Length: 84
Image 1 (cartoon, rainbow, N blue to C red):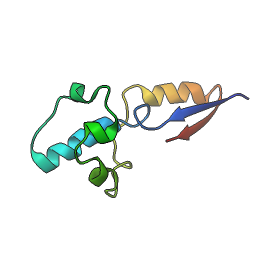
Image 2: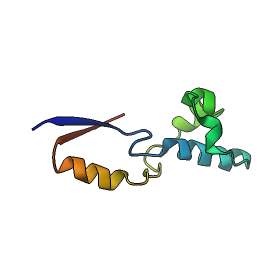
Image 3: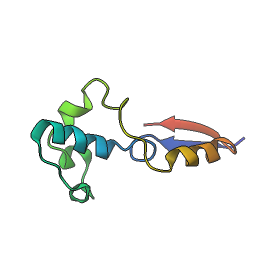
Image 4: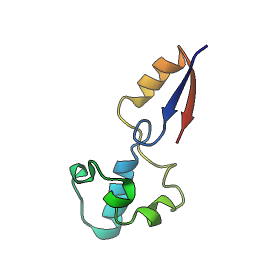
């Protein structure tokens, strides 16, 4: 059986939304996700280091729309390995 590697961040888990939500909780400012396009995570998110190290940051990240169905499709046809 062929193997498919699937990235977690930005493919299965919406970590950009998670960064923006954590930032909003901290600052009260809701930024448009478009301002993050083309930037690395540390460039896009001023509190990147603090938030990425907070307990539960990755565990509670929202699921990307359509990713569960896509993963189910792949899992039925390939050996799926999830990485980050």
